[in-house]
Length: 223
Ligand SMILES: O=C(CO)[C@H](O)[C@H](O)COP(=O)(O)O
Ligand SMILES: [Fe+2]
Image (tube, rainbow, N blue to C red; front, side):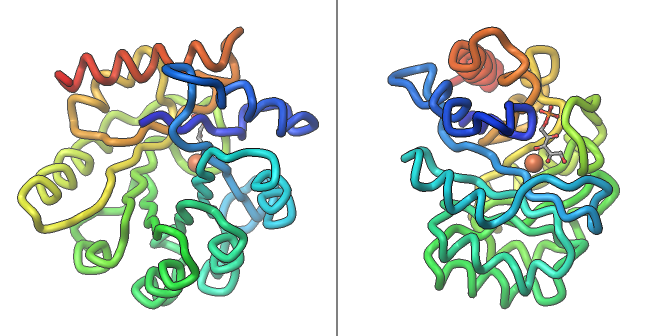
Protein backbone atom coordinates (compact mmCIF):
# COMPACT_ATOMS: atom_id res chain seq x y z
CA UNK A 1 0.00 0.00 0.00
CA UNK A 2 1.13 3.54 -0.77
CA UNK A 3 0.07 6.48 1.40
CA UNK A 4 1.15 9.84 -0.05
CA UNK A 5 1.86 12.40 2.68
CA UNK A 6 0.28 15.78 2.00
CA UNK A 7 3.02 17.36 4.13
CA UNK A 8 4.84 17.88 0.81
CA UNK A 9 1.73 19.09 -1.06
CA UNK A 10 0.65 22.69 -1.68
CA UNK A 11 -1.33 23.51 1.49
CA UNK A 12 -3.34 26.17 -0.38
CA UNK A 13 -4.67 23.51 -2.81
CA UNK A 14 -5.07 20.43 -0.62
CA UNK A 15 -8.30 19.25 -2.25
CA UNK A 16 -6.74 19.29 -5.73
CA UNK A 17 -3.51 17.74 -4.44
CA UNK A 18 -5.46 14.77 -3.04
CA UNK A 19 -7.38 14.44 -6.32
CA UNK A 20 -4.02 14.02 -8.07
CA UNK A 21 -3.62 10.66 -6.28
CA UNK A 22 -7.31 9.69 -6.32
CA UNK A 23 -7.66 8.55 -9.93
CA UNK A 24 -8.57 5.09 -11.15
CA UNK A 25 -6.32 2.03 -11.23
CA UNK A 26 -2.64 1.89 -10.40
CA UNK A 27 -2.19 5.65 -9.96
CA UNK A 28 -4.70 5.67 -7.08
CA UNK A 29 -3.27 5.92 -3.57
CA UNK A 30 -4.39 3.42 -0.96
CA UNK A 31 -4.50 5.94 1.89
CA UNK A 32 -3.73 9.66 2.19
CA UNK A 33 -1.32 10.39 5.05
CA UNK A 34 -2.04 13.56 7.03
CA UNK A 35 0.71 14.84 9.34
CA UNK A 36 -0.67 16.73 12.33
CA UNK A 37 2.07 18.61 14.20
CA UNK A 38 1.57 20.83 17.24
CA UNK A 39 4.94 22.63 17.60
CA UNK A 40 5.35 20.94 21.01
CA UNK A 41 5.84 17.21 20.43
CA UNK A 42 7.77 18.18 17.28
CA UNK A 43 9.34 21.54 16.36
CA UNK A 44 6.90 22.20 13.51
CA UNK A 45 3.27 23.23 13.10
CA UNK A 46 0.99 21.97 10.33
CA UNK A 47 -2.75 21.46 10.48
CA UNK A 48 -5.41 20.10 12.81
CA UNK A 49 -8.91 18.75 13.11
CA UNK A 50 -10.80 21.48 11.16
CA UNK A 51 -8.64 20.82 8.07
CA UNK A 52 -9.10 17.06 8.40
CA UNK A 53 -12.88 17.54 8.69
CA UNK A 54 -12.82 19.58 5.47
CA UNK A 55 -10.62 17.06 3.62
CA UNK A 56 -13.04 14.28 4.53
CA UNK A 57 -15.76 16.15 2.62
CA UNK A 58 -13.55 16.30 -0.49
CA UNK A 59 -12.23 12.75 -0.83
CA UNK A 60 -13.33 9.16 -0.50
CA UNK A 61 -9.74 8.00 0.00
CA UNK A 62 -9.12 6.75 3.54
CA UNK A 63 -7.31 9.35 5.67
CA UNK A 64 -4.35 8.10 7.70
CA UNK A 65 -3.85 10.74 10.40
CA UNK A 66 -0.40 10.78 12.00
CA UNK A 67 -0.65 12.81 15.19
CA UNK A 68 2.71 14.24 16.24
CA UNK A 69 1.19 16.01 19.21
CA UNK A 70 1.37 16.09 22.98
CA UNK A 71 -1.51 14.63 24.98
CA UNK A 72 -3.02 12.50 22.18
CA UNK A 73 -5.18 10.90 24.90
CA UNK A 74 -7.19 14.12 24.79
CA UNK A 75 -7.11 15.06 21.11
CA UNK A 76 -6.95 11.88 19.00
CA UNK A 77 -10.54 10.86 19.52
CA UNK A 78 -11.81 13.87 17.53
CA UNK A 79 -10.09 12.59 14.39
CA UNK A 80 -11.71 9.17 14.78
CA UNK A 81 -15.12 10.75 15.35
CA UNK A 82 -14.64 12.94 12.27
CA UNK A 83 -14.24 9.83 10.12
CA UNK A 84 -10.49 9.29 9.71
CA UNK A 85 -9.76 5.72 8.63
CA UNK A 86 -6.68 5.29 10.82
CA UNK A 87 -5.54 7.51 13.70
CA UNK A 88 -1.92 7.08 14.76
CA UNK A 89 -0.52 8.41 18.03
CA UNK A 90 3.05 8.38 19.30
CA UNK A 91 3.90 5.95 22.07
CA UNK A 92 6.34 8.58 23.41
CA UNK A 93 3.42 11.01 23.92
CA UNK A 94 0.49 8.81 24.95
CA UNK A 95 -0.30 8.51 28.67
CA UNK A 96 -2.53 5.41 28.44
CA UNK A 97 -2.06 3.96 24.95
CA UNK A 98 -4.16 0.84 25.61
CA UNK A 99 -7.21 2.87 26.65
CA UNK A 100 -6.58 5.22 23.73
CA UNK A 101 -6.62 2.34 21.22
CA UNK A 102 -9.90 1.08 22.65
CA UNK A 103 -11.42 4.58 22.49
CA UNK A 104 -10.27 5.08 18.87
CA UNK A 105 -11.76 1.76 17.78
CA UNK A 106 -15.01 2.49 19.65
CA UNK A 107 -15.21 5.80 17.78
CA UNK A 108 -14.96 3.93 14.47
CA UNK A 109 -11.37 4.28 13.30
CA UNK A 110 -8.42 1.96 13.26
CA UNK A 111 -5.82 2.62 15.94
CA UNK A 112 -2.17 3.22 15.04
CA UNK A 113 0.89 3.43 17.26
CA UNK A 114 4.04 5.19 16.05
CA UNK A 115 7.58 4.83 17.36
CA UNK A 116 10.38 7.33 16.76
CA UNK A 117 13.70 6.03 15.34
CA UNK A 118 15.32 5.79 18.79
CA UNK A 119 12.37 4.09 20.52
CA UNK A 120 12.78 0.32 20.97
CA UNK A 121 9.97 -1.89 19.69
CA UNK A 122 10.45 -4.53 22.38
CA UNK A 123 9.24 -2.21 25.18
CA UNK A 124 5.80 -1.87 23.57
CA UNK A 125 4.84 -5.34 22.34
CA UNK A 126 2.02 -5.82 24.87
CA UNK A 127 0.58 -2.41 23.98
CA UNK A 128 0.74 -3.23 20.27
CA UNK A 129 -1.66 -6.14 20.78
CA UNK A 130 -4.38 -3.47 20.99
CA UNK A 131 -3.38 -1.70 17.76
CA UNK A 132 -4.22 -2.15 14.06
CA UNK A 133 -1.14 -0.41 12.63
CA UNK A 134 2.46 0.12 13.73
CA UNK A 135 4.04 3.23 12.18
CA UNK A 136 7.81 2.87 12.24
CA UNK A 137 9.39 6.31 11.84
CA UNK A 138 12.40 6.21 9.53
CA UNK A 139 13.24 9.90 10.12
CA UNK A 140 12.98 12.04 13.26
CA UNK A 141 9.37 13.27 13.14
CA UNK A 142 8.81 16.92 12.28
CA UNK A 143 9.78 17.55 8.68
CA UNK A 144 9.44 16.06 5.21
CA UNK A 145 12.32 15.52 2.81
CA UNK A 146 14.75 14.03 5.33
CA UNK A 147 17.10 11.09 4.68
CA UNK A 148 15.96 7.55 5.40
CA UNK A 149 17.40 5.94 8.57
CA UNK A 150 18.03 2.34 7.48
CA UNK A 151 18.74 1.19 11.05
CA UNK A 152 14.98 1.14 11.81
CA UNK A 153 14.50 -1.76 9.39
CA UNK A 154 15.51 -4.13 12.18
CA UNK A 155 12.30 -3.09 13.97
CA UNK A 156 10.34 -3.71 10.77
CA UNK A 157 11.82 -7.23 10.49
CA UNK A 158 10.92 -7.97 14.12
CA UNK A 159 7.36 -6.67 13.66
CA UNK A 160 6.97 -8.65 10.41
CA UNK A 161 8.09 -11.85 12.18
CA UNK A 162 5.66 -11.24 15.07
CA UNK A 163 2.79 -10.68 12.64
CA UNK A 164 3.66 -13.68 10.49
CA UNK A 165 3.84 -15.93 13.56
CA UNK A 166 0.49 -14.67 14.87
CA UNK A 167 1.84 -12.82 17.93
CA UNK A 168 0.67 -9.45 16.59
CA UNK A 169 -2.16 -8.64 14.20
CA UNK A 170 -1.39 -5.32 12.57
CA UNK A 171 -0.19 -3.58 9.43
CA UNK A 172 3.45 -2.49 9.42
CA UNK A 173 3.76 1.05 8.08
CA UNK A 174 6.93 3.06 7.50
CA UNK A 175 7.23 6.85 7.37
CA UNK A 176 10.10 9.08 6.36
CA UNK A 177 12.55 9.19 3.46
CA UNK A 178 10.73 6.59 1.35
CA UNK A 179 11.55 7.02 -2.34
CA UNK A 180 12.78 5.02 -5.35
CA UNK A 181 16.18 4.53 -3.66
CA UNK A 182 14.87 3.25 -0.31
CA UNK A 183 11.51 1.55 -0.88
CA UNK A 184 12.98 -1.78 -1.95
CA UNK A 185 14.92 -2.36 1.28
CA UNK A 186 11.82 -1.42 3.28
CA UNK A 187 9.69 -3.82 1.23
CA UNK A 188 12.21 -6.62 1.68
CA UNK A 189 12.14 -6.02 5.45
CA UNK A 190 8.38 -6.59 5.45
CA UNK A 191 6.59 -3.23 5.30
CA UNK A 192 2.89 -3.37 4.32
CA UNK A 193 2.22 0.36 3.88
CA UNK A 194 4.68 3.01 2.67
CA UNK A 195 4.21 6.70 3.45
CA UNK A 196 5.85 8.91 0.83
CA UNK A 197 5.70 12.70 0.89
CA UNK A 198 8.38 14.36 -1.20
CA UNK A 199 8.71 11.30 -3.49
CA UNK A 200 5.04 11.69 -4.51
CA UNK A 201 4.33 15.42 -4.29
CA UNK A 202 7.78 16.41 -5.51
CA UNK A 203 7.17 14.40 -8.71
CA UNK A 204 5.82 15.97 -11.90
CA UNK A 205 2.90 13.51 -11.83
CA UNK A 206 2.00 12.38 -8.27
CA UNK A 207 -0.31 9.60 -9.52
CA UNK A 208 2.44 8.10 -11.67
CA UNK A 209 4.81 8.29 -8.68
CA UNK A 210 2.31 6.29 -6.61
CA UNK A 211 2.09 3.62 -9.32
CA UNK A 212 5.88 3.43 -9.72
CA UNK A 213 6.54 3.14 -5.96
CA UNK A 214 3.88 0.43 -5.52
CA UNK A 215 5.24 -1.58 -8.41
CA UNK A 216 8.83 -1.27 -7.12
CA UNK A 217 7.78 -2.36 -3.61
CA UNK A 218 5.75 -5.30 -4.90
CA UNK A 219 8.65 -6.50 -7.03
CA UNK A 220 11.12 -6.22 -4.12
CA UNK A 221 8.73 -8.10 -1.81
CA UNK A 222 8.35 -10.81 -4.45
CA UNK A 223 4.61 -10.32 -4.89
O1 LIG B 1 5.67 12.20 9.49
C1 LIG B 1 6.35 12.78 8.68
C2 LIG B 1 7.47 13.68 9.13
O2 LIG B 1 7.46 13.75 10.51
C3 LIG B 1 6.06 12.65 7.20
O3 LIG B 1 4.96 11.77 7.02
C4 LIG B 1 7.23 12.15 6.38
O4 LIG B 1 8.39 12.82 6.66
C5 LIG B 1 6.91 12.16 4.89
O5 LIG B 1 7.76 12.94 4.16
P1 LIG B 1 8.98 12.36 3.26
O6 LIG B 1 8.44 11.17 2.52
O7 LIG B 1 9.33 13.50 2.39
O8 LIG B 1 10.07 11.95 4.23
FE1 LIG C 1 3.89 11.12 8.92
